[in-house]
Length: 84
Image 1 (cartoon, rainbow, N blue to C red):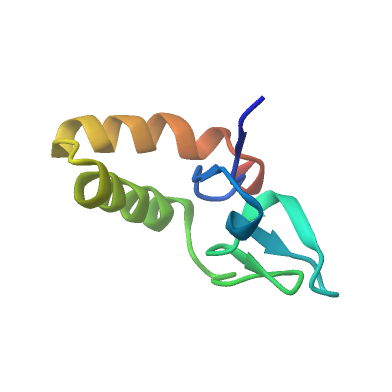
Image 2: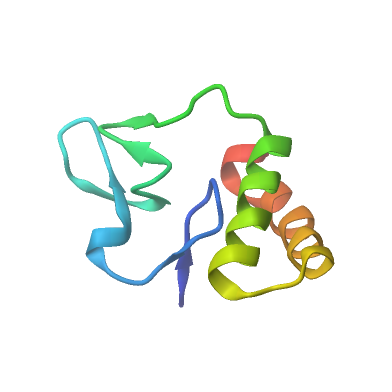
């Protein structure tokens, strides 16, 4: 089963992708961009800002068109653990 960051939805493909707990141990729920040393990197970010960031990333990194990226982000992000 493929793991995804429960904050931004990034696929967690290898150990370098995982965030860390307060002791530096890898955690399986969050990526290194969202969670480091047991804390969210941006604790104040809103779900709406995360949706915007993820959509922009999909446009830039995956070549999605704007409408497709926004639709994916709006569908995915609210279902993740962080935003429940």
